[in-house]
Length: 147
Image (cartoon, rainbow, N blue to C red; front, side, top):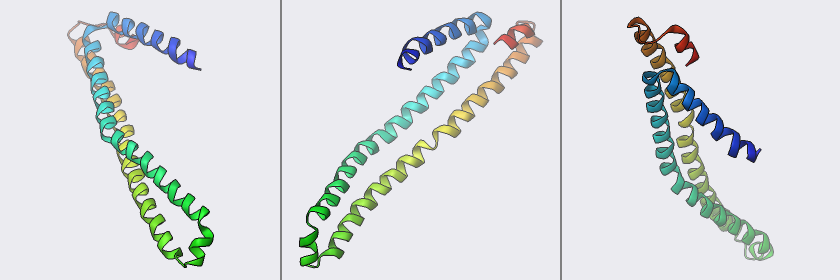
């Protein structure tokens, strides 16, 4: 599987780019711009979510610490009747972690609609630009279909 990712995917990408550029330069520019916009959206989402993922790891460590304290000190907690205090402590850490998960989920859920809009918009631009190029006799219909 990793060999497929490391060898086959880049090879297919290179040959696809060569085939696209040889087919139509104008349509290649539209594709290149769409890929750059998609890459910019990935970078933007990455920089928005990465700090939250780092905080999430620390919050996960905190919730594990609180749970371990509760398990190891269970007799002491019952002896001093501090169960409510320990529950509140766990609920606070749990609420912080849940908030981070909620935030990252909301931000990462934007990726699918954005990518769909970009890819569908690219299809529309290719059809529109292709129709214009065919109408001005700069492109043949089979070349558009090949693209």
